[in-house]
Image (cartoon, rainbow, N blue to C red; front, side, top):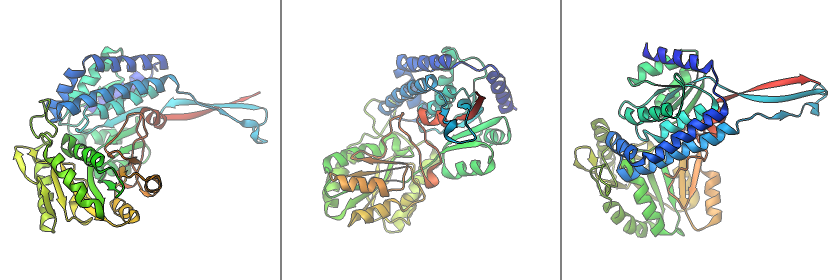
Length: 434
């Protein structure tokens, strides 16, 4: 009932469209509030998600840029002129398109970026002129409610944003079934996402899903840079990011050199209380996640994998950063998304072999390559079947204005305010007889 009431409120709100300049002003004000309350909001993220404070601070800064870029899009949202006299039928006519909001957006967001991934739902929806019914992750509702509060303080009228906290299945069910919800934006697991898509064939369903993120380290790479970036990025937020580095492929003849640099850097990471400034790796989200990750590690070792470091619990939900060798693509720790502080190491002969290995899962969100060779980098960029390829940077990298999203089982849309605003707009053609 509550979800339906939220949809009613959103429907009423959209009867009085907000002009673009007002939408942009609200978005800019939210970015300003995030800046002013930066440290306080970072602490909320750290406390509710268990995200180390230094990573939570980066997330708040990123949410600021998400709102800022959305404000830019709100101000330049425009259609185009159609070249009518290019055909006989169109002669003597003038035509142009108007961009209209698609309608109410049902948004479902995950726990791992409880502020910025909510921002990627809310800010572009408002920029496009759409009201939102948001269901944040049950583990992390506070960051979403805080963002809603900031939008209200910035002058967003009632009904434009409705946050509902509760069981995903019930709320999601209403969002799927109610015809007034014209778009569903979902970030989460692949299996849940594709099921939503099947159940709502007439809605726009925007999916940002999982990955088993591969990185190729070529023999000519700067091994110090690669080891440093991969040690930090594989384990930040305990690997609970859909582009957390999970599979590292090393060219055979540099494998030992790389590991000599990599393992000490991994072991130097500080595992502990996420609300302390020094912490690099905090807890996983709940006991269920901890138990599943440990089971997958055990399965891999039973199938012949070796634990090069970590592999055990420090205490509670803190899993030591884990590196596994002697793995293969048949193991869950390679094939599926671990979503935990686990990285697998494998080696290869030629770049083409590495590309085959990297492409060897059902996922395709982001991948990376470390190399000093421009031809190798460009060959990888063309042959890796992923929505993004990073060169000499961990594929855990994301800037909020870039097109971000996956292929294969990893999704069907691109985020980044410019891209999402287009997805949430419909074109209407206007033809004038001259």
